[in-house]
Length: 271
Length: 309
Image 1 (cartoon, one colour):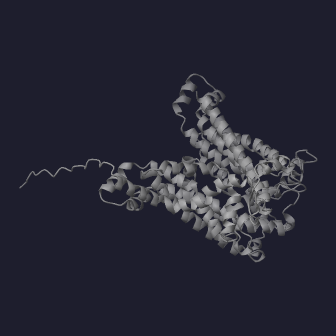
Image 2 (cartoon, rainbow over the protein chains, first blue to last red; image 1 turned 180 degrees about the horizontal axis):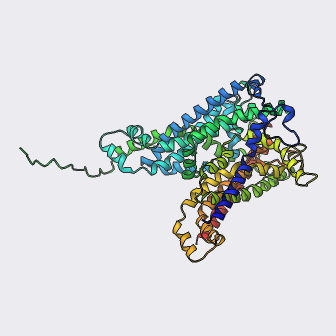
Image 3 (cartoon, each protein chain N blue to C red; image 1 turned 120 degrees about the vertical axis):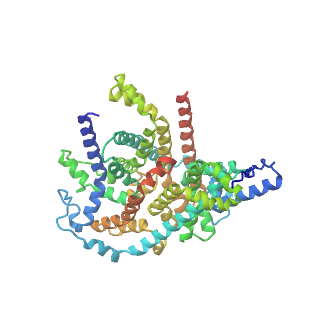
């Protein structure tokens, strides 16, 4: 590549990346300002005075700790269940041959293509009849058994040669033993990418909690943040402080598991 | 002393003829793996998917006894202008969101695919909006687009546009504003899909083209684009499906407003079904959404297959 082209590619990329990151810069910068300074004319990217106090004050303004705890609880539980039941079911689909298996798998695949809104109402009715609306259990049940998790894990298991499980079978290991002692240790990258994707999706989920949770004590950070915006729409700095706090855990998880994220998306290609 | 006793040759047992008892136990083992997931999946996804079709022919509010009303819900729907507004808005959103996201994702991927130092940093930066919570995204964009002293309008005034639009407060500009925010959020995800697609194009093709004197645009047009066709097909389907399902971003940015300027089908389903409790009518709207998504997906499959021939 010629030097001119290389330089212009860098310039273009740099410019575009800055453009993409501007909203984050604005968020962080505003979270450190006084309310009155957020919409200053002209825009001040570096606060004249750093109001670190925003980050301690917000905990007293809304039950942020409760929201965070709920988000952590839901994300961890749903991720654990999904990885566990998903990888278990995927073994059945990928490595055990039995009549009816392929038809069953087709049912899983078909529902991935159906928009959630199309069956949101009957789902809600079922939860209502079971008395689970406005409980965390409803969200856990809704999200822990996703067809997507099964699909992703199965695709990965298909790449593990059948000879391995054949050999283990001859050695007298049961199917459950093969899953636990051979397949699971081999599928760490897939497990990690499924866990990360599920965790992030659950953490960021707005629609599920929005529909199912009415009780303030059960709210997640997303609902809490949204209601804060509605209640105090003049407190711009505080709103940005809350946004930063809601994004921070995701940033940390993302930086830790970046490799798996990209791998998970690039190989499975699905959300 | 060495004895040359040949080890007993391991004889593989001949493949056992499938005996019914063995097959039955295999079936049981297979099901036992799938069952823990399947119970939840069947009760909360499979059954609702099937039930939503039936619900659309019923008049039901969850308290009274359901009544079969045939196509009444659908008839009411086609005479209801909120439905048509939402349908139009959903199409408007998709027509804006799909091509813009696709072009942005493709452009970034091609740029990043060149051997540049720091590509990892750029990839990370561009992907990050995708995993940021929608609420934070919506709130930040609303503030950036704030009509009076938001940074975007300050910038527009600085470059000589005296009366920049009010964005989310204007019936004309609310949808473009939502589309911009959504493209910004989604492009990183599709960029990664494109990057994966670019890896599958053999480098020799480019080298050969260079020898033949093809310029950059010609190489892009005749090697990159055809090589990316399977990826583009996949991206197109995913983008279309997700566009027709849009809810969270619009709900938080504009709540469908101002007026009904950004009201989309999924909000109608939510309002009619879960807020108003009109389950039958809401399910009828769901069926329309489902049929649209299905039709578009099938048409795209058909076109893809034709272009492969």
